[in-house]
Length: 162
Image 1 (cartoon, rainbow, N blue to C red):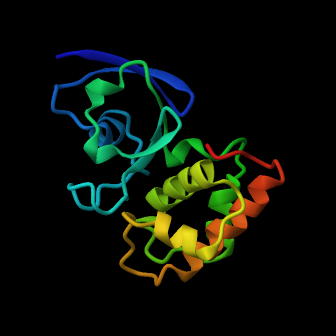
Image 2: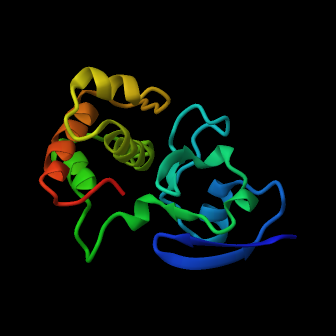
């Protein structure tokens, strides 16, 4: 089995992985980072979204072996010094979750939206960009409100998109 080395949430890690091991499996099963969820196994739902080298990806569609030398950020890596990232805080403040299953992927995708589209977002852009992230509990209204609020907060320099 190949041995890979990568940085996950700022920590260097290495693991032996089979060629077919997915990044989501490496994170959840080998590294015990269970905040990244598996919702569909077909890369349709977005629950497994993480940042790979700064770009939002569905980790159920990425082979772990292809991540040699990469940098991965998961939902567990966003908070610093016990303080939530502004996007996490906005999801909390705006009640942008119900069961919470999709929330880690939504937050990671939201940060990628801000990275790609900037802080000056509108509702239509957010809704379009969330395509590929499914939530069975909400009507997305509070999720969109949270992303818009966090984008404004982040624009003030509090924190950049992770």
